[in-house]
Length: 210
Image 1: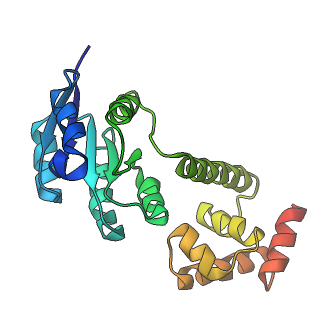
Image 2: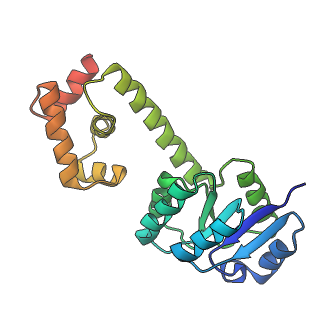
Image 3: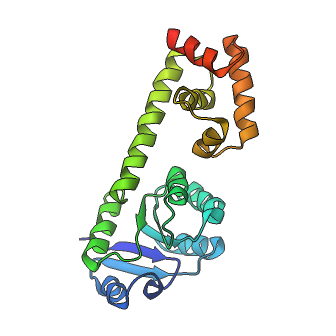
């Protein structure tokens, strides 16, 4: 069986118990590398070594651009985040393409299983996050089908209208789509103009009538 190469942006003993860290380092099916938590260090490691799973420590949403760059340059890499428990922030990373989230208290056996699952091309999230991810993809699929039958609006405008149809206000839409409220308003003005209506209720009714 080929070894699974794992890279961690912190020493494993800083992310998990010494017992679990030692288990990973001694696991015959794993090859483990450690590096500093910086784009320069990570990029340098990925250029020199073949890495299957990258465990990145994040503390807030300030690392989003950092992560976006890594995913852009290494699209086949399975990236997992750890060090954070805020589900809204975790979901932002998921939307970028992160494949999993490791809790701080994961057991030795669960961690080994998670890494093998990720290596096989699957994802690793708890039930609540998995449900949220599934809902996101279902929503994207529905928006794509809706957009195909209503080519007048762009994909992003269709996403905005999907939120509007659920009764969401501008602020909620901006948070759901990770755009500013002013951008939401701009999209709505364009939508109204394209549909020939003056408000969101008229827009929703017109789209349902199509």
